[in-house]
Image (cartoon, rainbow, N blue to C red; front, side, top):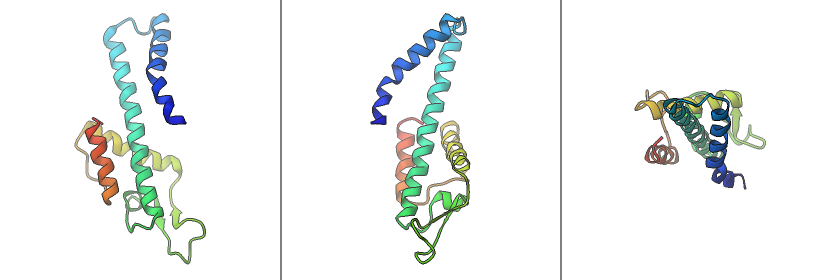
Length: 136
């Protein structure tokens, strides 16, 4: 299971720090801590952004009327007569969806949010609360 790879994350970070330290890139303790903080924030933003999109996408596939990606124009729902496999009509690339999700995660981490991407369903709201509680 890919989730178990998270248990090796600490070892990977220590190994990467050792390599960078041996090359003289991490002589300054402040730089080392800043690098570790940046990496941790980037990883947390990635997971929370992907989770936010995943929760919304699953809700839209179940037929929920409006989710935040639909409000942002990333996809639209089709009627059951138009749909073949999925009731979603993808309007944006996966990369564009990832950037929008990452933007939400970083704005949530850095500020209290701008309000341009907001949860529209209970499941999205629960994901947002979870993200805030874990410190993102």
